[in-house]
Length: 247
Image (cartoon, rainbow, N blue to C red):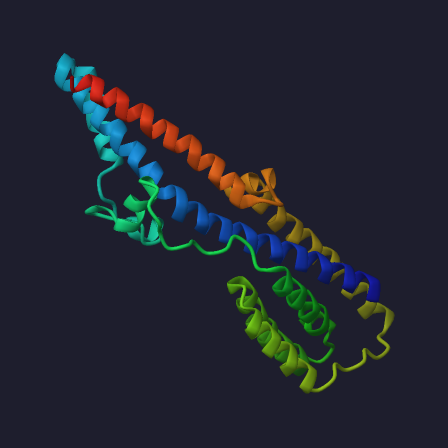
């Protein structure tokens, strides 16, 4: 039972760590590349409109209208691009990025190694599944919620404070002997929990951002730089094509 519980906790730590990496990578992806995607969509619309104006072909006109519709302001666009764009267009930070000017450094992709270490230690010590009594389990769940929030922010200072708080608190109660029926029920619950976590991990890995992150788990920043270079090249190609159409 102890081995099964510890294995589940380790698995939960791995899944939670990967979830935080995916969320932070997704945020950074939108911050850094969102303006470039928006610029490409705008150029596509302008190219389609210029082509339609030149040919007058109804099919070209239809394509131009569709391209323009894709870049029309939509509810929630500012939230989608995390403050880089609104209905009036790109913010100064986004424009600066496209022109290689200095901008505010984006948020880190992943928590630091020290934050990871603190998180793992706290999760192993204070995990709710180690509690037998409902009161102790509730205390641990509240504590772990704060630990997870601090880890998601990469807040090392907060994690250290939480470690001190846990060390000063009541020691976890030792698990007493349980009837065999309870042991079997517990093992079954652990197995079900493991299956649920496996589905969560699979969804994360198969998501678009998760798949990108797995391409460069050790250097995701470099992966974003490579994608940014490709997008900038596409922007240059579109601008040249638009200039040619406009004569």
